[in-house]
Every structure is written in C-alpha cells, then in structure tokens.
Image 1 (tube, rainbow, N blue to C red):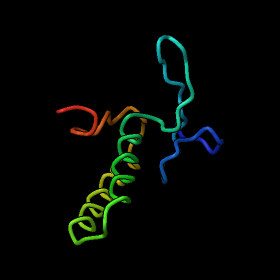
Image 2 (spheres, rainbow, N blue to C red; image 1 turned 90 degrees about the vertical axis):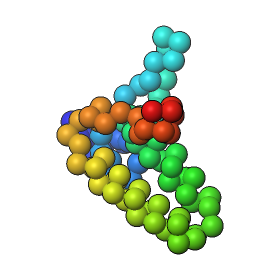
Image 3 (cartoon, rainbow, N blue to C red; image 1 turned 135 degrees about the vertical axis):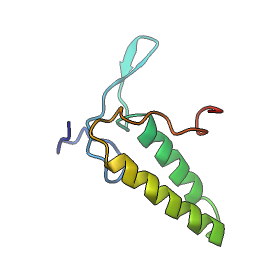
Length: 89
C-alpha cells in the first residue's frame, strides 16, 4: 500500500511504507521498504563514486531500468534482493 507519510522508502520514486527490521528479535527503524530498494541505492551510490566514463553512463541507464521495474511493483516485497549484490546468486 502506498502512503504520503514521512515513513516512506528513502529511494527516489518509491512510496512504500518502511517497516521495522528485526535484528536479534528487536525491531529497528529502516530507511528502505525492502531489500531491492536498499540494494538499488547501494548500487547507485557505488556508481556515483566512479568517474563518469562511457561504461558508467551505460550502467546508469541500466539502473534506470531497474528503478522502473521497482516503481511498477504493487507490493514492496514483490522483488527481493537484487541478484549478486548481497549474495552470489
């Protein structure tokens, strides 16, 4: 469910509510609605740190496509972690 409150995902273009994350059975606040948005931001920040070569510009284009997929979700858990970001999947 989308919301306009201040408890929304920190990723640009995502309006899903941020749910607390359980760490050692203790709910802690999160900044992203799910793994995919968190991974997206991790990748974006990595690209931001690189020199703007033609390859990096192409990667930004690919990342925009990922953002479009994330923005088309109807549920924040519809897409889990992006493959290869947090695991070898």
